Image (tube, rainbow, N blue to C red; front, side):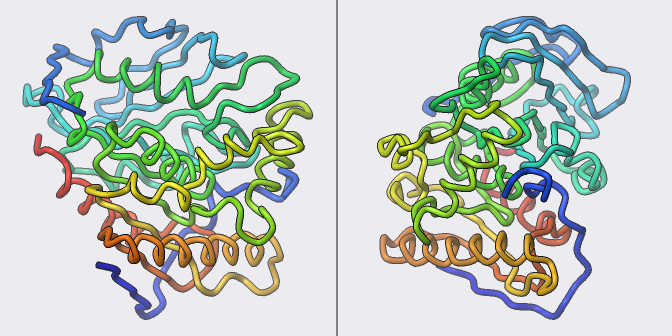
Length: 329
């Protein structure tokens, strides 16, 4: 069922995680029992080069990996009782947006610790590149930038090896803002057996609409700030890759998942970036919702006042829905 909701205006956070103006426009039930996060070690192609484990909840790791030319990092936000409960927890993989000021700390900057306080879920927030688009690019002039490989083949199993999680379909969710919302939708469809819940906060689900506006933006932004002139999808496009990554071309992959999305319906009229960004997101989400509805796939879709921003209250509502869908701690 589609939930269309246009409530009274509410307070929102300024865009953190959108592509900035500087950026040229399972299976079986497997319970892992890592004794504590402090036991974290190398594995799955990741070598820990730095770590921070002094905070009771937010633990940090930086890795050397052949998938990425530089050393990407992740924040792992633990439940309040992780160190004393002995329980295993579901995991939310939460992705940041694009822009030269965006990284694995972006969600911490806007308040994720407070938003998750008391919640029985682990939240993993990785680097995704300034304009990595949660993809292995067609070309790069600055060494490997294989973010999809890093997230899916390396980081995910590393987390499940080193933390007390449910390494199963019903133990994982994926979400993100802006470019990260696209990444969440893409991964949920491309790897349908991995994630039971997916949500996109101002994330674009339609790559080809409006003459391929999102594909062009991915190519231009990645060439400018991520790949040294390389491109995510290439020129001409790698059509098979575009189709494989395009949520609206992979509708059946969302069946039996919790699907949630939100977009703004009133971007700032004097901010061309906000207008262009969120207008494309909103049109794409309406297209996506229509296709899900035609296929009989339940989903939740919100249209909220404002533009390309993170909405704290909507995120909190989404988080409760994610926890409700996943296996209980």
